[in-house]
Image (cartoon, rainbow, N blue to C red; front, side, top):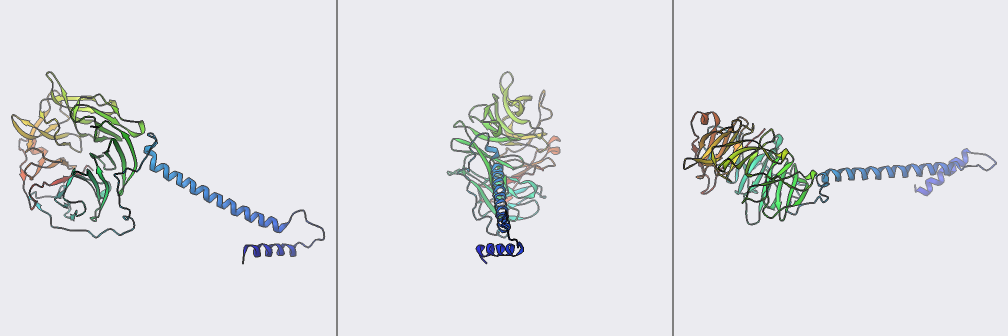
Length: 403
């Protein structure tokens, strides 16, 4: 029945029910039809309003980090995978990985193009390739964030899921740094610095700001990005997107190794008389003002190193006499002289700490080194363990767990 036929039937029904000789002031059939039309219009308007509110809410959630800068964007280096949600994840790719003589599985290891988990899995990283520079575990066992080594095209960032599928998040980026919980990422792109959140296998709510030509991100302190203004000179900037553009901190830090759970940044600064490299705890909330400083160990000015998950220990390269060694520094005993112990051969890549306070790294020969704090304090430096089966020139990449 058409709408006209339905309207005529309603009018006839009301005509039969209202049998009066005088004309009516109101047309019952017309009134009923108008009420029905008005109800349909109201429902339609409510639906449109709800859709608009939903759209605005979702849009506001996606760009809330960009409100302060006024121009949230979709970074050109974010590639993603447009078919990732429409196709099933590939089945796990298992592979025989090179073996390291460790006797236990405390950390995950990237061995060439294989991710060997501490639980015994062997996941082939065929999409990621063998050029992994460093990696972090994602929260809640959601997988791993893998940063590729620099190439002529730039760096890449991948998310590897527990079942073995790899998703490309960034490609062609400059320096890439992840927050300690791997929920945020910052990278250099052209003349700008970009920060964004990581949700699942997506980079979301990206915000960008112009920076000097030599500036690079070096880490996170909470929601604040630590920016090295010029790798050739001391000094950093602090960038908290909701507070505006980066601001120079006026610090004298030559290198920032990481942050502690209390929020303090662990850095190498130039201090003392005469000036010499010293270890300092800097407060990002006060423009990286020094809280404690200890001078004594001779640490490398721009070498690899990392802070333990509990914030007690720093493992970094330095010198013992004229010999290059990895040094273990007690950050709770910086003054007047830091408690420092030789820990093993020099560090040649990322350092991964376990929650129990054991550190792993690779040396210049491609061996894996396990540093147990208690043994180092007893005077026993760690010895490298060979990794059999790695291609020449490749080093194992340990993956820490800060949980």
